[in-house]
Length: 212
Image (tube, rainbow, N blue to C red; front, side, top):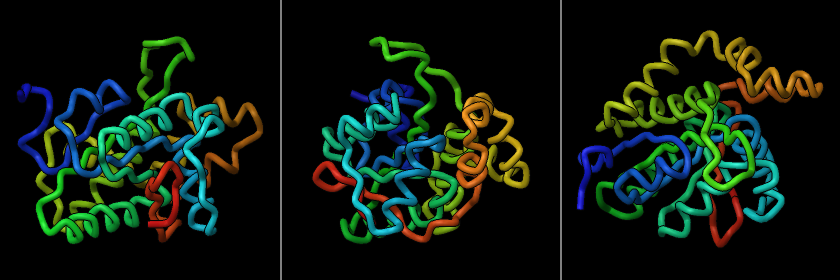
């Protein structure tokens, strides 16, 4: 059965966290966006030729992003890991999946957000870095002609387009960014703010992220 909130009428969809993934209609491709730090770190490691397992260590780094990826894979979707650094590469990988299937392919872009604790059903905190990262992926999809977006996806896209010039400032000034700056990880936050610095996408295959 469809619902008013499943965005099933649209090819490109957008939601937040694991509950958002469940709210959407099943999608052929799920792009998980967890900019600080899961997606950006894994994107760099995969681009360097290193496979990254979606295991207990990944869950320890990412309270939400790894769980979303695992849930999407369990539902049979092709799972990509997106961020600002690999937005265009991720969009190309999604389009290549559509070409491989030879049919219109639904794409759900899921901003991981920040869980406030490790407790079950902990509230999800809005994370501006994930909004921008998701918007960058959606914008890159549109540039490839994959632009039948839901209103939610369109709004995320326009947030990135309108604020692209301020991405470095927004990431360092955000709550997540400030937390990392306090830990001495300013360079990591600035690196995560670089748009399209990585030319390859990360896809989950048999429990491991590898280059698409």
